[in-house]
Image 1 (cartoon, rainbow, N blue to C red):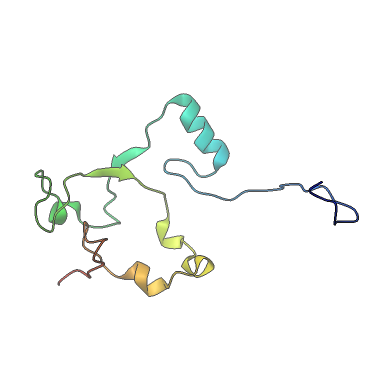
Image 2 (image 1 turned 120 degrees about the vertical axis):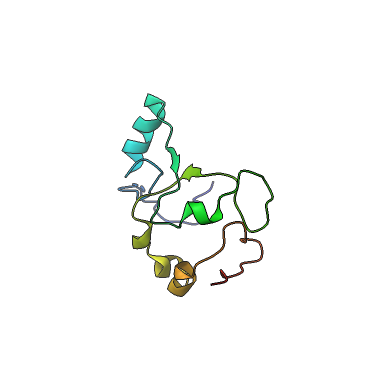
Length: 108
């Protein structure tokens, strides 16, 4: 009864999917990563920020993060912010790790 007001329902086909995952370039590679039990957690890439400037082993140390690791997608600088309605300049601002709640720019 879902289609009672539609004269003729056409079949729908999903012909593609686009996504990115840590450690995998596409859904098939991500599935293989899961099947193989590969852990995509790596040290924070130097291209993101200087981990040594922000790392401190004590959790809750002011202005610091207490981990050196995470799951990162490759080529994040090629992210199409406009497609998702995110202003590009927001992505380019240097944010202090741990300040996401306040969204405070880094003090230079």
